[in-house]
Image (cartoon, rainbow, N blue to C red):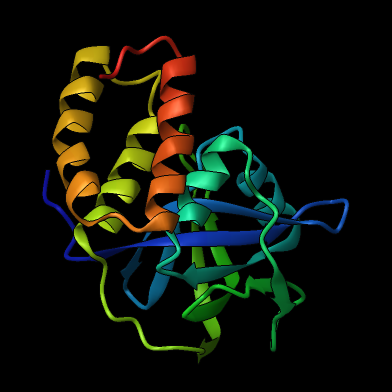
Length: 192
């Protein structure tokens, strides 16, 4: 199967729940053919919110606690109102992009929402991820797939990622890593 030539951005997608509360979820979003492809699993809050509102915000942030927090119940992050859509973006976003959904491929297990860029704003420069930040993002991806991956694979990956945490983590990365390790242990996976 040929792979589309696209870049995947690890972002936090913010949608608005029926209650009016923001809902933020980490996700890999790609740019293909002039659209941002947002692919939430079904069922999920992000999927429901996108179907109902037809809009979302992509938050590019280097605060990896937000990635880990979305998976571990730490979701209360400050937001600001968007400029062109009826939504919000994370205050911690270095850049945010506002999308309106142009079309949907409503397929299982992941629908594809094709988002058109309606606004983009940079709030602070992105200076790149250090190794610990990258390790937290990879661990968050593993934690989101605990039911899909064998325990041995998760243990092997975490052992390697822990090296970067030990060498380069600051307070934020250590906090995020701790949240993720607690979640993985609660799932019954032994990590050393």
